[in-house]
Image 1 (cartoon, rainbow, N blue to C red):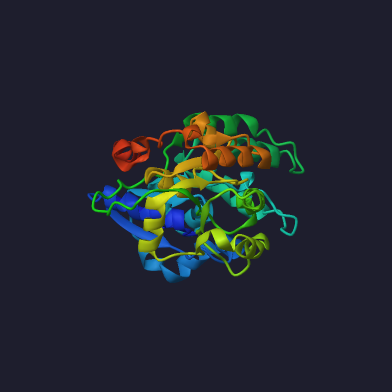
Image 2 (image 1 turned 90 degrees about the vertical axis):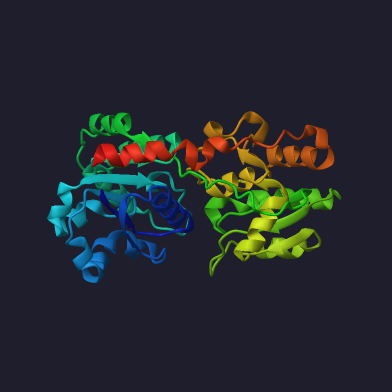
Length: 354
């Protein structure tokens, strides 16, 4: 089976998914084309042109399956290379633009939403990494299409898409048994998300400011992907929480893994999450996940690992966990998130489509 794997905006989680998928299904003949995750507005609209100019010979070949991420403008690409339309076309949604929270200084991402929608409609199979991702895409697309000048009858086609869509998460690689046993540091809190406004760092740090002022003992590792411009709260937090900090900023892979292995708690305060690989990875290594009761999280985490989504709720749960160890739940079982539980489903997706 020959599969063309297209990743138009290869963010860290997208690259992880593509590389692990190719490694797990190593009997498939893979051809991967990817584009760096920068210049978002140009990338999401211009990826067919970029590939046409750079990869014309590759795209002129025949494939049994075209597997594309939702950032790929699949409809335009098929227009430029009509023979690709003869392959079975699968689109994988790591996220969708209809559920992305827009900041006050951003223009609405109409182009990105249209690419998501056209790509889903051009595909033979559509796959989402969570039910929340699927439902927020369908519901968001319906609301979006109501704004168009004509009153388009979109409800039935979109509901039909919901019913035939697959839900397959990005699986985790099995935790290596060769890793040395890192001593657990129960008071070590980890933040390992992108340093952007949609991850809601303000709630996280404001709660830590309060805990610090009250003399609650904790350590802090602020990890994750950092960009040229980050919310101002990070600079404030680095100064105000300096006595707690054991790591600040992106770390080399080995150091990052060691910090996750020893972490006591990993926190999310995000407004934007469709699966949350960073939290899952830390939980797999034994950290207690503490996530808001919204987005994809209720389907993934039992109530003991969720708070009500408010600053006060986060404060109370963290205060209890940090000051009274008997309030902490047991480490979360994560084998259901790992590749052995999902390999056959991915293989079947490609086989049925081919």
